[in-house]
Amino acid sequence: MRRLPLHFKIIIGLVAGVIYAFISSALGWNEFTINWIDPFGTIFIRILKFIAVPLVLFSIIGGVSGLSDISRLGKMGMKTLAFYLTTTVIAVTIGLLLVNVVKPGTYLDETQRIKNRISYEIWAVSVGEEIKDDKNFLNNPQYADYVKEVSGSEQVIDKKVEQLQNNAETTTEASPLQFLVDMVPENLVFSISNNSLMLQVIFFAIFFGIAVAVVGEKAKPVAQFIISTNEVFLKMVEMVMKVAPYFVFALLAGVIAKMADTPAEVLEIFGSLGSYALTMVFGLCFLIFVFYPTILSLFVKGMTFKKVFKNIGPAQLMAFSTSSSAATLPVTLDCVENNMGVSKNVASFVLPIGATVNMDGTSLLQAVAVIFMAQLHMVDLSLAQQLTIVLTATLASIGAAAVPSAGLIMMMIVLGSVGLNPAWIAIIFPVDRPLDMLRTVVNVTGDATVATLVAGTENELKPQEALV
Image 1 (cartoon, one colour):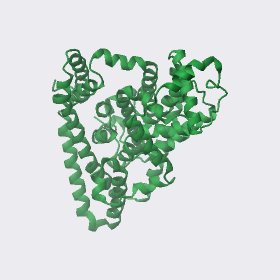
Image 2 (image 1 turned 180 degrees about the vertical axis):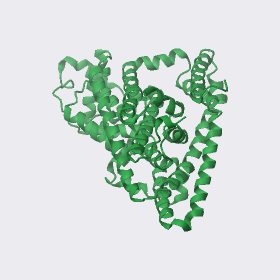
Image 3 (image 1 turned 135 degrees about the horizontal axis):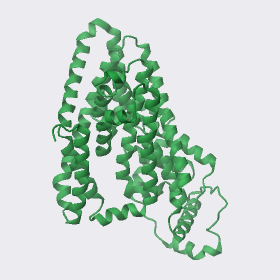
Image 4 (image 1 turned 90 degrees about the vertical axis):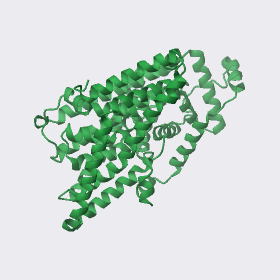
């Protein structure tokens, strides 16, 4: 067991956690699992998150201050943002193509879809939203009984949906350059203590690193202190990863135990949204197993599909377990530097930015989920509206980066941009948690891919044959 590579140990932990969760739910042990096993998974995520912020801080300062030519920083930043925006647009486009071909929202019972359509028309009238297609179920005598049934049902807005809607409205009403304002910290100590303010930590780290580089020889003790401190945090990551498989077991057991009380209920949740879940899984897996490895094999000499997964496998598995790019960041940095051959300067600059603003998996979600919900309500979105989804999802991924539950808030913004009811987001809640695990794998894999591409253009990438 000790000789097994880390990613194999984590896989064993994942599988064991899932098997245990189904057994415990079948035997009625869910309360025990949630009370006595799940907390260890929470502890694991907390450890990774508290390491992530100082690691980002010292890694970026060390990387920027180590640049011999500061003018390279601007070029590197432009390349990084260009690559991240490109992969985001591609992810949204893949999602749109997939959901239009599969049409997962049409597999629901026709009667229920008609009722959904009537409910949509009632909502549109109540908020003054223009219906852009030529259907009119509300005033059609053929559906009078359905209208009466739908109108008589009481609409209850979930508290979570209401909170997300408030946050989405705040984000939408903000100035177009508000995200730039939000990048600048008012209080550094507060920013470091809040994981959702990672962009502010990155801003300070870059600024401080530039200052250290400009001061030069006089700041050498400061630079040495930063490098040494960063090594200590990396050692902490190494120590935590030795027990990662056990924590991963606790995480997965807790996730499934919280989803439902019995195995049948878990399967029922996926059955009700099966077409949507399968479409999402296919799209996300396409990005993970086809798109990113293809890009790397084309642009990085000596890189093969097998090497890609061997090199960043531990980070991918950690992302799946934690559902957090920020919590996975310490592991991603380790994999990209030591396995992919990316220099510390590039990795420490590109990856923290990616963990904050790069949301390829979440952007694909916007496309698939929004079209799926439109199909459920028999709403036909035009090509112009679907292009609006591409643009809005791309821009929202930047604007909502520092907001808690950013992915769901992004979706509400996208729904509103094409005239659909933001409250529909509650439809996908039952399967969002497990799909979020897979989305995080996409995000982390995208971060590693962009970091490798940027390093290649900066001549900061070790040849694959030189890596052990």
